Amino acid sequence: QVQLVESGGGSVQAGGSLRLSCVGSTIITVTTDTMAWHRWAPGKQREFIASITSSGSTVYGNSVEGRVTISRDNAKNTVYLQMNSLTPEDTATYYCGSVTKAWWGQGTQVTVSS
Image (cartoon, rainbow, N blue to C red; front, side):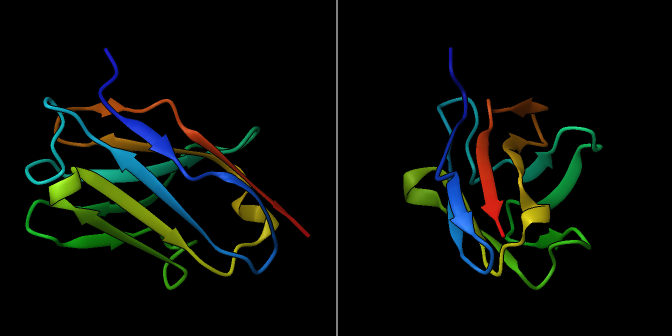
């Protein structure tokens, strides 16, 4: 049973933008859970990107702060990650998850070319 579905990844040139989406379910609801985005690139450690609490408080990772924005649409039970000024170092698989329920999606691939 799929609990989280990420989408929006793809290939983009350096300097471009992408918006990732993460749709919850009846079990994982973005209105009550603390939601987060992480990323994982081959040969690197899993990296925290951003989180948003049920009250709307946000936290960003050092490597992306100022370039990404996490938000949510309660009516759509969806969390977004807007990423701007992408560089090849942003190439990774991006995972959305519920920190509250320790559940992560299958990931969406982002590839940034120079």
